[in-house]
Length: 100
Image 1 (cartoon, one colour):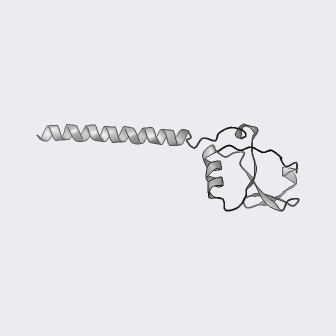
Image 2 (image 1 turned 45 degrees about the vertical axis):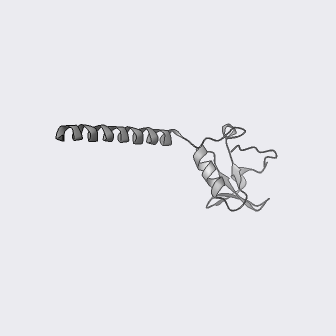
Image 3 (image 1 turned 60 degrees about the vertical axis):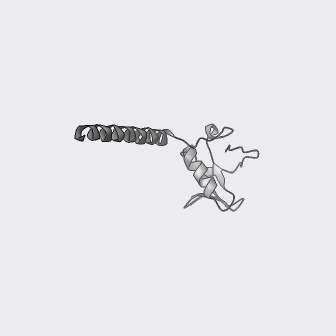
């Protein structure tokens, strides 16, 4: 998925009223979610689970590029899980040889 904003909103973020999911824009009567501190994974999850259109605030680095589902934590967890499975398999093999 790629976030492309062809007609960006020019309303003042600070002038919007706080809302539980972000800020409410009285000009367009929508809640604007703040994704500036969100990972690609969080942005993808928000858009994939949304029932309606989403208005969002983004950093320039989040726009016009493919969002990546994998982040450093998920890569680390996959590596750790693979290591544990391999280590567990080696321990099981060594245990079988010792009892044979």
